[in-house]
Amino acid sequence: MFRVLIHYFIPGLSVGLSKMEIYLKLLIFVISSSLGFSYIIEGDEPGNNLLWPTEYYFKSETMNLKTGVVEPCEVWYSAEKNRSRIDYYEGMVKRYFYGETEEDSAKIYQINPVTNDRVTNKMVCLKYGGDELEDFLPTVDDFTYQGEKIFDGKTVQVWKSETNDDEMMYKIEKVLYAYRDGDTDAPVKLEEIKYKLWNNGMAGHTVTNFYVFKTIIKSEDLDVEKLDECDEVGQLGDNLRTDLQILHPASSRDVDKAFNSFKKHYNKKHGKHEHEMRKAIFEENWRRIVDHNKKNLGYKLEVNTFADRTDEELAYLTGTRSSGPEAVGTVPFPHSEEELKAMEEEIPQIYDMRHDGVISAVKNQGQCGSCWAFSSTAAVEGALARSNGGRNIDLSEQSLVDCAWDHNLGCNGGLLDQAFKYITMNGIPSQREYGPYLQQDGYCKLENMTQVYTIKGFARVPSLSETALKVALLKYGPVTVGIYAGTNMKFYSSGIFYDIDCSKSMLNHGVTVVGYGVRDGTNYWIVKNSWGEDWGEDGYILMSAVNDNCNVMSEAYYPIV
Ligand SMILES: *[C@@H]1O[C@H](CO)[C@@H](O)[C@H](O)[C@H]1NC(C)=O
Ligand SMILES: *[C@@H]1O[C@H](CO)[C@@H](O)[C@H](O)[C@H]1NC(C)=O
Image 1: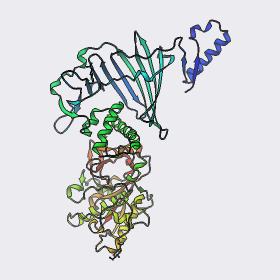
Image 2: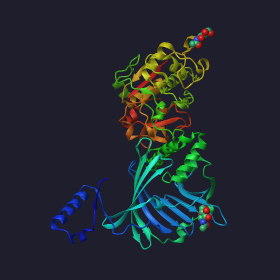
Image 3: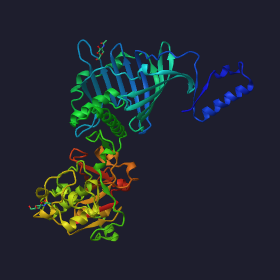
Image 4: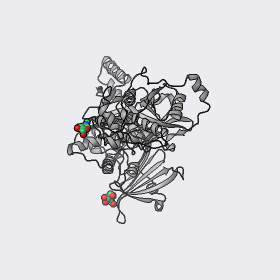
């Protein structure tokens, strides 16, 4: 940021300065302000220390410039009462902090809406064991006085702080505008930029504007309304799901708690030096998930076992490359456009092959880019089960990882049409005979198998045709598709997945469509993934059929048995 220091207040300029000098100073003033440079008027007196009142109320709006989420808050704080409270979104979520008293230990109460099978948006109060009182203004000691500035027509004091967080994993720059009001200060605006020190990237950028600021509050505003209706949930750190509901990624203390809860839940062990880096990555992912869920889009994200990993580290989750528009099956798709049009009327609105008992359990590719093997094998398993009266045979993905190297690269990725071509020519053994899935490249043991399952060939479904994909599912069984799986998909929890960011990208992941449906007018595909049962909706994701989102209708094949 450029900064032009003007040493006097503008009205004082005429004293002892020639017209030319005034003109020059004003010119600098005009240029610097019109170009958006911030200019600072050095105050006459060195700044005193910042001092927040011991009791305050404010309304604020925090804009997250990285995610575009705007979060309105209302805050009450009283050191004397040893209580504080924060409301998000005009009271949609209220959280009270009660400090320790002679009668009772410290508590946190959260009141938030709950929707489930039985109730819609019922306000529910939960009680947790708390500890220190939450303070909602930044720590004064970190800030140094920079000077005064005109902001929104008012003179404000500019304060700045630069801190390194947690063994230097982050650098945090804060600029605070405040004004003196009696003996204490009142905040006007706080800008916070967080840099990752390990790769210099920006981890977060928020701007908080403070509106109403009062130093006297009504005592009853700090009382939970129906205290006796609050259910005891226990100590934070006991249950990841409930902890993450009450904690907030904006507070560093909450991040610590959430991260510890996460580690406990997923039994993660990090080395001493790894801990801070993992926490930083966790925080970024958590923030992304919380921000996403606040937007109330059609699908939810959740913290899962991937939350302490970067996208680069999670590259093994994907591993399918596009075979391009010219790739074809061993047989052509057997329905012309006219035929499909004629069928459009008759095909059912919903179809879920899982209900026919022909879909095997969700598997986990683990730390191996073998989705191409899992997604093609899943389709073969489904097609075989359909043809033999529902008998599920667990086929060996490992045999493809080990043996199908003609156009694939084992754990380093593969192509869907090449996987089917390989199975057409060589067959695929059962997992029982071939041996367990190893999450790594191994020796091909195909020559010693007593039995392999074969397919007659495979067909490619015409791209971008919803009807063609539906007909393929209804008539021939599961369809293997290439999609783009980005960061949001890694944290998918439930709902119909539609990600604006993902349609611009190439496909990188292989999955298996096992049905389709419609909810609130949106058509979706029921998609089996290979990231384990804990991910998404029991291992599945509902992917929007709109706009070929995530390329789900670009490259699709089904095996013919
Ligand atoms: C306020 O609450 C904190 C945290 O619960 C507690 O440690 C402290 O003793 C309390 N202070 C007073 C004055 O009661
Ligand atoms: C196949 O079986 C033979 C005889 O038991 C054995 O020598 C050979 O190592 C096996 N091949 C593989 C790839 O396991």
